[in-house]
Structure formats: structure tokens, C-alpha cells
Image 1 (cartoon, rainbow, N blue to C red):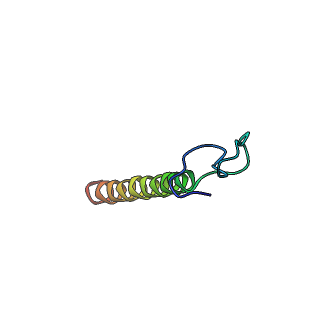
Image 2: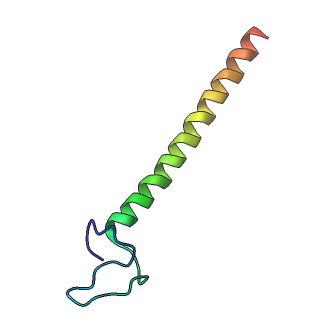
Length: 60
């Protein structure tokens, strides 16, 4: 794997590669970032929902 190789098959030197034999580091980093972003959004919406339930409990 090459760092910042966004090709689906990766690069294997000067030899042409038909692809489908793994992924590049850029793809791994991008997918990891997407997972972390999804977790952060889920946590943020959960925290906002808890805050709204608490506020409604005070005034209800």
C-alpha cells in the first residue's frame, strides 16, 4: 500500500495491475475519517436530544 494512493487496486510498481487486490492508505484514512465522523454526529445528536428532554422536563 502506498500512502495517499486513492486507486481502488493500489499500485504495485511499474507492472500493470488489474486491480482489486487491496486499497491504498488514502482510502483507509478516508474510510476511518468517515466512521469517526458518523460516530461524532451520532453522539452530538444524542446529546442535543438529552438536553431537550431535560429542558422539557423542567418546564413540563
